[in-house]
Length: 242
Image 1 (cartoon, rainbow, N blue to C red):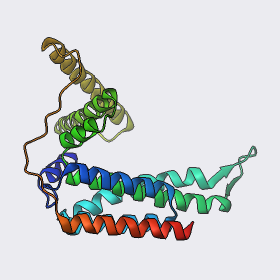
Image 2 (image 1 turned 90 degrees about the vertical axis):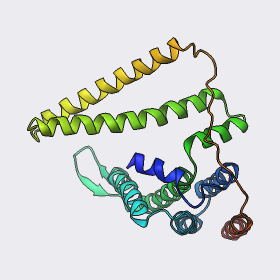
Image 3 (image 1 turned 30 degrees about the vertical axis):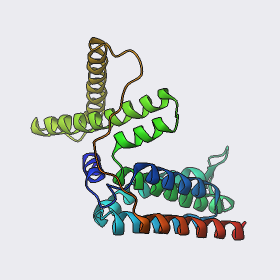
Image 4 (image 1 turned 45 degrees about the vertical axis):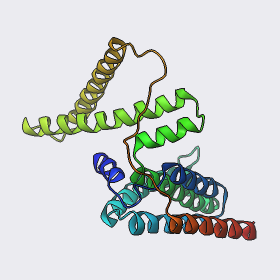
């Protein structure tokens, strides 16, 4: 799934739009999603779905699969917010927190939509380049880079270990799952050590350089005006709602 999203970032209809515009557009919507009401958050989610599926031509199946995974993760956290247990171990449902939970879910999905838009329309090296030009501290950029790098390492190691266990007629007992997790983190640690030694052997001791793929970027006036008008309408609705 992660590799598929990375491939989509290099092959979508919004690929040639300037990354600065996409990053600024997503960050402005993210700020509005974190601060506004659930109505504005719902509009942001729907609007970005149109951008992702309609304009970027990302498959709706990929979007639905990613949204489903996020929704499942969020729903798993709902019982911890609604269910309360007293000293006598009496389980009760706190209805007063229902509005808070719904607000949290809508805000989380709207924020995910903003970040997912960037993920599937802008290659990661271009995002790092934009952050560098925005004078973001180098330590944060390098942290983003290594996190991005090891997400792929983690996915590949998990696939290899799972296939190896199934090929050896691995069982479904919880002990086998624990062994798989232990081997996975052990392999990740070895990959990290190999990368650290490779960087040290090549004399990398200062700031790392991130060179994005050479791509002709252009400004699409239609998308630009639509983004400006849409952001203005959302801001107006936010002011009215406030």
